[in-house]
Image (tube, rainbow, N blue to C red):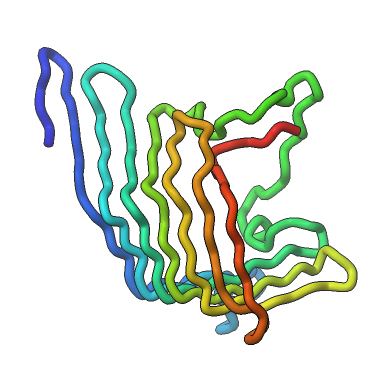
Length: 193
């Protein structure tokens, strides 16, 4: 919906989204011409029930995502010998910046999203039937695990609040072990140093 209020314009958008049958692979520059690729992420369906964008004539813009559902998914998570996530090694210009001085570090938790030019909210996510291959080449001896039959939920969170979201996951480790994770998380918060 687009409307004019006085001399200013106001825009509102409501909708839903679905991305089906996605597969993301990684190829190193040297191997870009070869047919070998490493699967990093795939899923059968990623749906978003509710997407709302408000660009008011006056006031702060906002983006609100409804509940996300991820079904029949696969992910590969690897920590390199240098202690970095594998994905960080694929991105161009992946050098890490200088760490802040002690006087610049926050004393308490702060919102990573506070600097955004808009408010952000999310109704959470539901994960159905996932598989995760985890490899840690940083620790000695190296560690790897295959997590399967992953089902879980992450609760809602909002950039204007420091409240954490509920987190629950259950699955199977190495085909036989029981995995259960329960807690709280707020991906929008930087913990104090």
